[in-house]
Length: 488
Ligand code: NAD
Image (cartoon, rainbow, N blue to C red; front, top):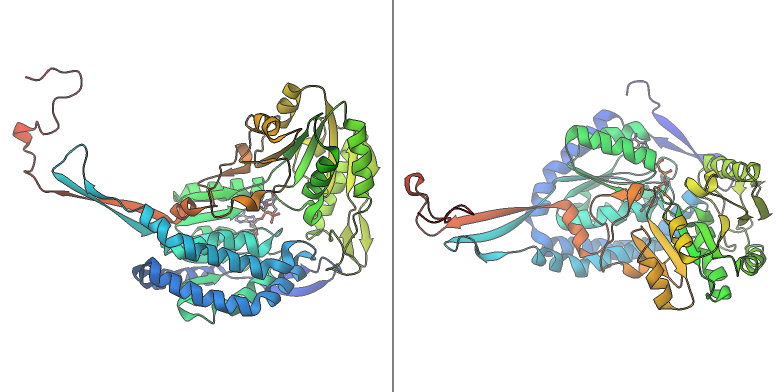
């Protein structure tokens, strides 16, 4: 790491100018922070979940007073115009939810009683926190995706060392101004700054990793974790399909597809990236979609006023442009949008509707992460399901059908973790209930949502006490005869 820069220039997504310099953490700083957190974690875990809840409740009060500032900082990072401005409130909901759920999640892991198989043995479970959790997060929802893992890890009794994306590093310092108001929390929660090499330095120090980001980086993270034999939880990309059946209410379908595809400029892991519409309603669907897409306004004049913002990460605009060009070269038609515009230094793309697409095109195979809506006609339900499942990804999928039963029947056959029926973007509906497992490239490891997700930061030990006679090797019949062998 000797040759890497000490400072990274950070671009403002609205002006295109460098307006922030990120001080990059050295390997020694990463190691020193990890050591300090490890030392403090012992007391954090020993205080128990109820006392930890007390500390987190005090933090929640501080976050409430700074919720507006946190939103502003997040919007500065992303260019605004999606959940950025409400990130302070989302943080409050995250912490508040775990305040209610963590004590019960711990209680549910407790087991005490007699053994079924050896009744003279008493069993007791003990849960032990992973001492140090590492969190590596992406640029597309910088605060939310860092805290979705960090907050439950802290409730579980872990210390947390976080490495936010170097593309959107501003909001983390605003958050940590609130963390430092609560010394017990600041003792076990810290962050380091930088790019890939700092991510690798972090992996070298921690006991488990929660990573959110792209498939290629996820692979590198998994390899580094495998080298150290530590667990890793990966939340990766998507190429999420939506099926619209011939019986669907077309207004409902168009409205929900458009939002699901272009919300946050399409820079959402579970954005709709492929749309399959029954051939009998394809043309009517596309006509309505183009009309509504053209009414979507950019936020270039005022970050709080429009519907979609600039690309947060300038190279993403190049990837999206490449996907559109590849599709056009192979015969697709762009019905609206299609060209990235530089407005005041920010890079914007209006909702882009394409038809005549096929699975030979990058735009139907690889993650685009922009406001593009490629639409393909299908002739029967079997074909729609086959096309939806023709992917390496499996994060979420949507079905808009004539009624909920028709939608469910199709949804049950799609390979994805979350299936949105009769709408899109329903991810928030299952917060605090249960998690789901992605298919294929979209993720690995235990679910990150719901009380069970606490388990990612805990090991369960078992204490077994023999109250009866001890077994004697010379007369070892306490377990009965081996299966299939008659008693002597
Ligand atoms: P990315 O993979 O480029 O970077 C993610 C993080 O990994 C950053 O903090 C980066 O600095 C770090 N990193 C980069 N190289 C590393 C390495 N070799 N070792 C360790 N860390 C390294 O992802 P991104 O471009 O910031 O984010 C967009 C991607 O994230 C998209 O693919 C999107 O689908 C995905 N994503 C997934 C979810 C989900 O929950 N499944 C949510 C949001 C975003």
